[in-house]
Image 1 (cartoon, helix red, strand yellow):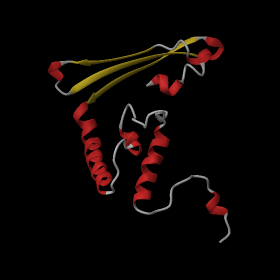
Image 2: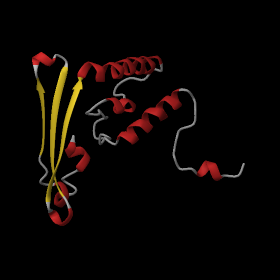
Image 3: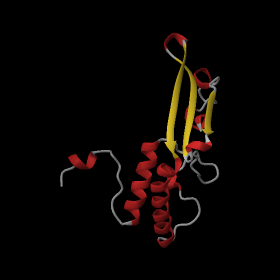
Length: 140
């Protein structure tokens, strides 16, 4: 996923040599509890090497349950509305968003959330959210 976000082909000086390693360990006595380590090598001011390290302890089922319920409801809404195929507006819920062939997958969570909200507003016949702010200053 980092390759899509950082785009090392377009920015080789910045991201052409990035190494990313994720490790998730399952420890049977902990049951559903998992521990994930993530190391990202970066460089800082004057090119000094740096690392971002994340250690995440979680329970998969507690994290997944509300997401699965939301997706079940949204897939039902999509089917009732006659939508089929890839549901890009639900990218907010997936680690690896799917798109139509040739399109770039959007990984920005704020854009994904706006697509989700705008699709729901479109399905309800409401105006899209643009965040331009122009409508606030237009004279009626």
